[in-house]
Length: 107
Image (cartoon, rainbow, N blue to C red; front, side, top):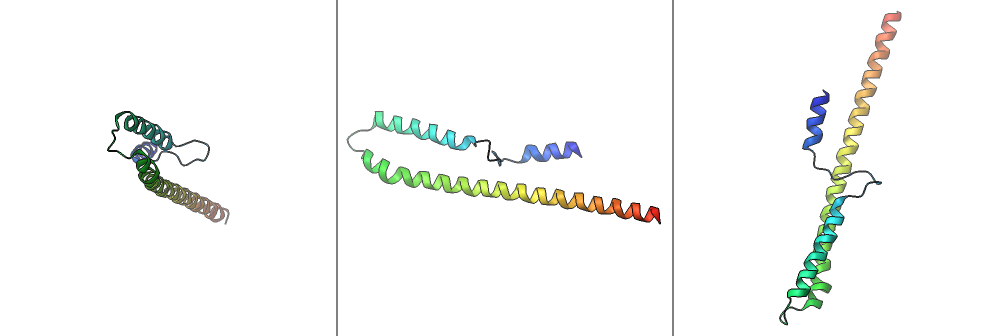
């Protein structure tokens, strides 16, 4: 059973669901954007409107990425909540079964 749980944990692709540990996704996103902006700034020519790119397109791309990240995080938290509820129900069933077995053995 423990080996099966380890295999299930290896298959899940959740960055983090706790509030105390930061997700590396945001840090990776920031470093990637910093690199891209640096490359654009050094290689841009007169045909590229940097202000339009930075003021219009960059916030739009960032908003889309953050929206997808929030949806993924919400899904991960929901999966974790369902797993906890299932484990709690299993534990309660086991406890009730033990209590009923104890009552029948006393009678």
